[in-house]
Length: 346
Image 1: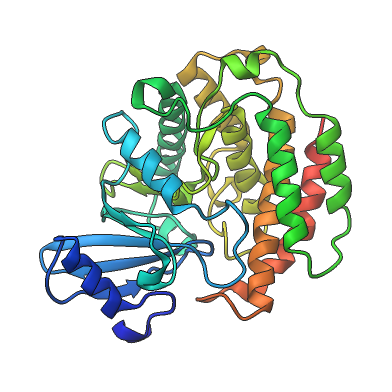
Image 2 (image 1 turned 120 degrees about the vertical axis):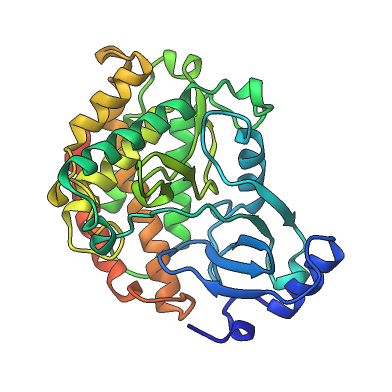
């Protein structure tokens, strides 16, 4: 790890000054870049009696609206009093002049994060089923929160949500183009042409996490309860099925490929298959088959979204703007994800 005062993306001396000015901590602060994050940069902070985490956007090529610190702060603060476990926000800063980008500081929730095989190997088979159940039960609790009851009624625009998502991530793709990817534009066009027109989608609108997956959860190492849900940068109001289709794409798709993103998760690693995740979620929310008819499209869109996110990371890697290991393999994952998205489309 780099020395404390030579961390990429974090001017520690400036942070110390800011913390003192905000009356949060006046004294020494040490920091460490947390491995595993390939989008926003995340740092472990130790400031005397305080155990904190700092989040800021990535270096260099930043996709528009994809790394919104203010969005994370808003939703974390709103969900603090609900049954959805989230870290407590300590403070936020929108002034780019402090460390070079907007950032926020939150409490550090200790626990188990299953980022890959090394962590998953500590869990027995029955525990892996329990973990999958806890993951889906927590997602169901999130989607059961009434946005208006926590002050998030203006957090997004549910009408036309799925169509706007295709447009948005298509634009993100255009901003990250550095090579030809066979089929990705076909997938984009087919998704746009087949957006579900379910009139119930607005009625069932809820808080959407936007990047819900196993390694964005902190687990209690003894009970495997979800202690905290992390990484809310893409949260909004929309169709909750988008939040179900995305983890299925990670689980059954990305999890089936040797890769540094989802290595060790999914059925190939002893977790239940994706249809078991769907069944658990549907039971928790009281949904039937008709309620889930848009799920195949949402899963195909999940593949497209992950492919675009990884292509953006690959672009930053080619520009020398990434920090950490494993980025040299990210680009290899994009073509098979595109193929899986085309296959998943109804």
